[in-house]
Length: 403
Length: 127
Image (cartoon, rainbow over all chains, first blue to last red; front, side, top):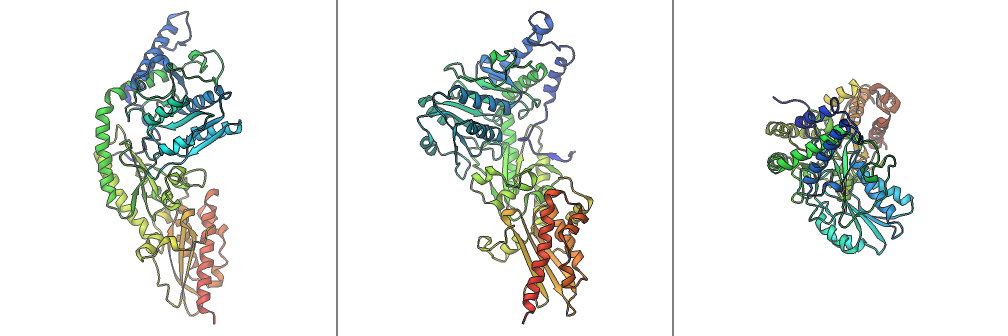
């Protein structure tokens, strides 16, 4: 039995796994204590739950639990890491580096640091969405203090060469931050091997609740930061605020499940993604955005040329997906990520991101393939661009009356 | 995007989709917009000897409002003289379809498409 709309937007958020929800509930009602209360059992049991969850989060990424700081989510983790490290090292240098395809939580934080007097470099990516390591090396300066690169891109799912960037940063003594919001449970993360100083995590992209995340802060060699939230001195002074026990328990349980099941789950997801790709590739004039090899199996981002994104989303309302089209966002610009990959505006407008996850079924994928074939056909019948292409007109030679 | 019933109706069941031969004496073709902006409208009118628009066809690349706006104007221009068709204003289109403010440009584009189609028709019939 299919349930509509079919959810294929797992990169936006995931449902909380029922096992996670079950684990959380007692911490809202029975065990409501403040983990910072040292004087009674309510506090002690809450503190233990928080520390058990911290171990689960650390275990997924092979870190020490003491290196995990709870936050409200990846956006806060990114802010804390980037502003915290840049401000700590501002006496050493004022140059910071990131990539054009980063999440807004990183880009806007960089903009804010520019307002505070830092100089930022925003690296281009190659056509496959990956950064060019030679270009990265060239961008480094003697006064570079911080580099921030995401592990897995949220729009196109490509995996950046984190290990290689880490080697370069460590060699030069530059703090390296990685936004791993889209990576947990999808790629193996081993912080004993990766030379990463700071790493941001989110629970809700990995079947945990919204409103909770964590920042990994390396102890050896020690990553230094200035706190951004002041108060009771929680989390060793790095992030004050009463800990949300139920949320933290949920994140711990979600990351435990991810660690135990990701190998099998990723194989199944890959099979579904390949089935979807094969089913969509026989539609004329479709283009996969981003590298297909250096990519998580969960993501398929495709442009359907000569069909506009929002009308396509309307046509496929039986499935819940995202589009790179301007019309689906508050701004009227098409996806800056696809633009950075060198896709022209027209293809950026016509893109759909399918993201597959734990509860996606083969039946849902087959329904989606069939639906896309029908609707793309219908919209192309309606498209003057498609008509011109069929008549042999090269659209690049047309003088458009821009508006 | 929360659209009105009318937009959804035009989007689901677009009226007068298709094309006339551009070379036809009585046909005026208007193409406005640009792929880079996310919408391109092609509106064609077929004008009788008496100067009355007998038929209209469209094809649109664009969002739901752009498709609905162009579908609507194909209905509106039929039976009008070319001069009367030029009196259709974008505000009337936006009002009829209850377009949200961020989609007003779609109605402007539809008005422009009428003007472009009429201009093309007139060009054929000058001198």
